[in-house]
Image (cartoon, rainbow, N blue to C red; front, side, top):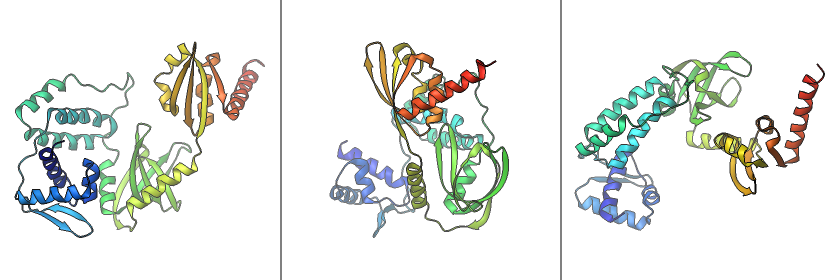
Length: 317
């Protein structure tokens, strides 16, 4: 990136946040802090009113009006892809808000970039299979985001799938996670007096209370994630699989912690990292005699126990 393009990108970055640190700019553009200071000074000399707060960072004066941001065709295409995915990873409330934002973005695009979006619009689809789950009106994503920003306590009715029970909870939200195709609220639960993971599609009702809480969100969230990583031991698994079966599980293997593979004649040696050997063993059973467990021994023992149970269930009848 030449310096002119970098100065424009830094200006856009400054517009995107209330305060931006010099280190953040240096990290994004892979430049030294000394270069950041020179670039900021160049923008100031160009008439951009950039303020600085000691120990915090740089900001653009609110009274300064900047021209509309222009997008490249690549950036416009990326926005289109995001718009296609959002309806399948959120709810109707978030989808509606994004589409409104997208109209505003399109309004400042150059005509050729608008043409790019129009041509791609009908050619890009997201297909979740023949049994696609209908999009919910709301999974409370907007309410939870507001509660995070304003440090508000949430009151929710939660359905626990494992126990098939409803419970009322007061929680202090610290973060949102998207994994296993679902959004999860990470929050301090006052009932359990500990951090808990609440899957959003299992929240039956949610209200944002007027009560606030005092908890440093980024620190609490990082501590929770670190604790989860330590708590759940992951096992290294090595399998020897027939090539035909390896092709059959080409997609599903990623759900089980796939790390890599090497070919060995008519077989493929695959390595995995997985915290749930019981669930992993049940998946292996689907492959019948097309797979051999190289390691660990505990997984081989689990498979033997499962096969013995199947034998006793069906051969004794």
